[in-house]
Length: 78
Image (cartoon, rainbow, N blue to C red; front, side, top):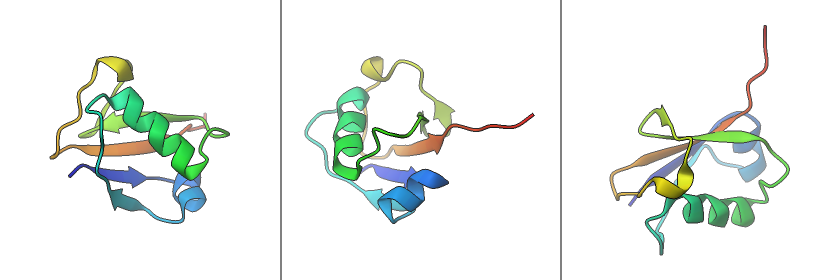
């Protein structure tokens, strides 16, 4: 079962730092859309990392049971 981790404001929004999820689709884009809806994350900008690598094309990535998916808030700084 994949583990999903939330960081920063996203963890505050979902009221947890991580969760294990069951999923119907192995497509990362579908999974992210389901989690955005479940936790009302539409108002936030974030990136997705899988196994500590940023994924730029969510639709091309297939999720496996052993994956760690991280929701990373937009970072600002200088």
